[in-house]
Picture 1 (cartoon, rainbow, N blue to C red):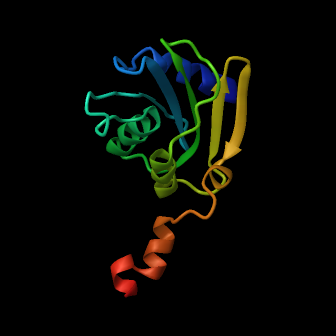
Picture 2 (cartoon, one colour):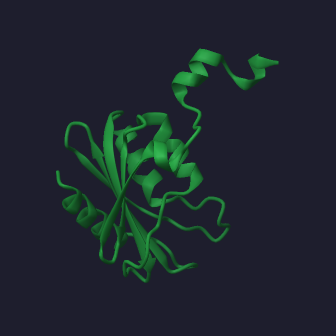
Length: 143
């Protein structure tokens, strides 16, 4: 799967967003190691806290289906479904990515003229992974 095709699938996913409060529609396309792609969109809520990002929607769908190995994700967004600017994943989404992905996991930030390419290590330096958790134990055990 090319980065361009993954970017197109992220743009397609934007159309499914539920964003009545902000009007900012975000789409994501998550590429699994086996070539399967999961699309996700943002889903807003009037209370804002329960809002779910497009990236997490894609990951949660994939994990539900038993997928655990991922190679890349494309993310795009914009007002009223038009791609405008770059929409990097929020901190919560980056931490969800870290739960399942290695440092070299690729994140394509799609914009109106193409996309930027980053790795998870670049987007989430000094991260805390599941492997480190298992090695060091839980924070409560560290006391």
